[in-house]
Length: 427
Image (cartoon, rainbow, N blue to C red; front, side, top):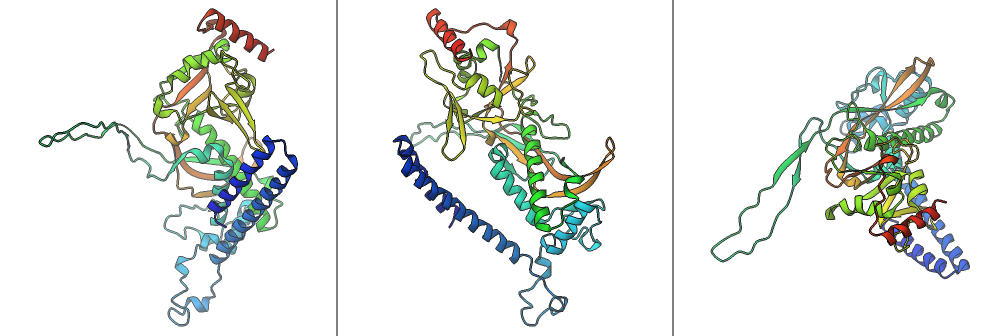
């Protein structure tokens, strides 16, 4: 079953399930639910089998005798140079011993490829584990999966094109003028090192390759997701990604005092009205506490809800605000409004496709000593960089000072009704 077939079948079942839920037919819904769970299990089983087959197909052991045949039977099918040495069981075992017990990587694996920069203190992560980490990032990293991923050489200037063609009427004897594509801006990427530290005590008792791979991939994935999410929003650009909150090219900033932040009128006039038409596909990003405490349940001047939470039957909760999707992030990515300092960014509106994450996703592992605790730890090293390519559609919402609050109303009656509604909501 292909992924497209799987998604089509699943979407059909989910549509049927929604109809039964809306009609209150729980018996039929439970039947559809069982079918969805069975379909998910079948697809996962088939995908796992395909991945295992690919791993087995790439890890065939070739005897020295066959390697030296050169011609002979099957000689044209066996080429040791095409084998990924970092995906063999021998290297996986050596890597596990290096990461868990600090045993040196055998010399034959060191700098085996021209592109490898492995030093005596580091080791390349096995290919299979890298694939699993990348797969985990794409499936579980909500921010990571929405970024525009590229692999561009560091230091190369990339123009940001402003394409604004116009159509003109022409006659038989006159042609329209050529329109030039002007490059107003350009960006370049650097080679920043992202490190994810893993305590040695966590890995020291691992005894099997499967157990090590599952644990290592889990820890590395979670660490990379957390670091990338912080980098997209709060990265300083010095030795790390450039976050949109620190990017001097982002000029659209809106300060909302408490009264405006809790009022749809304040958001409508100061935020929604400033979103350009071509950037309407963006999303709001904010801490969970910000959405739950201020946006969820918010209504407009007529009492219609504009802040919504949809509890999906598949276990996925979706948030929206004024018709725009909302992605909630951890508090260390964007600070909740209640605990934020004055003028601190508490919400961002943007389309993550306009943010570029630049990396070849090659990872290495080195040992690191925490001199504060005298403990040996393991670091996963990833060379990457990131910054916004188009900043025109990014709006930063900051916390305004309470003393500067000015109630924004369209009229005495509407302002009074809106205030009464909000007071009731937050009572």
